[in-house]
Length: 394
Image (cartoon, rainbow, N blue to C red; front, top):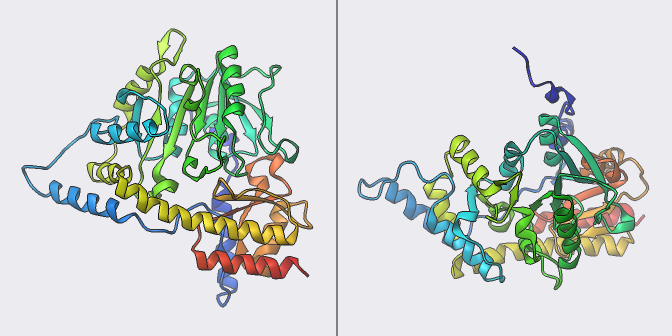
């Protein structure tokens, strides 16, 4: 028996586990301190009333013989897939129902999609980057190359013809930097992928936060993207489903590599390894896309947008450089007075009792930067901003 030795190449602890341990140790040593957690991107607003009502109704159906449902289709119930189709259509993007696959979240699918790709592929990921992109490929033993995202390029790296890659990860708006690509910039990535025969894995988990004209909410806004891209999206941040778990992945029929349809390969993978999302959750997800649900979800999103504005305004007043905030729930700030982001983490925790995420945890280009999120309550966000203002205005 042999283990997968690639797991031994991973960092011993996941970034957010390390943060949790540090915060737990601090709060245990200082039980009188009120620690404000602005680091992990979990939501704080409750599910929309329309979602809760739909889930209650669905739960009731499961308790009656006439409406009880057992196993559902692994790729998602048609009623939800049609609702997602309508959501894309409202933005001018046409999809077929069988191109949409319902899942328990984008994080799962971003890792699981790798099952359909050979391990002898080169993977291109931006740096800094959401750790799951890197870790899942390390687990599989793939070669990874990096596209440098820096302050000089606005943390939005563009394709380099001298770099050969088979799989390309793009997250926009980006986690952790909050930077968002324009449709014109994504068109360059699509052109690169088509020329190289690569596949773009496009993470659109934060698309609902994009408000600025010209910035993309889907890679399928770009002509030709259906021939080279898979898109992942989630209701976690859009509708507060972090604890409810539902997302979706779009694999176009036109996407063919090695003479095989990636749509059919993904369908085969899902029907073999995934039993689908529960009926009750899918009914709740369907309600998100109703007129009533969308209006209620927008109210919650406005809370996070206001939070982002509060944090951005604070940093503006202090003259601290940052990206994100306007079209993203993330604020990516330059560590004032520190080049080591973990030392800044400790300093902020000790002096202001505010928790964020050290940029170095997202890659070498994250060193010297720090991620704050807008997902806390409005009260906590305002208090955190005031603590930052008092600490750094001295």
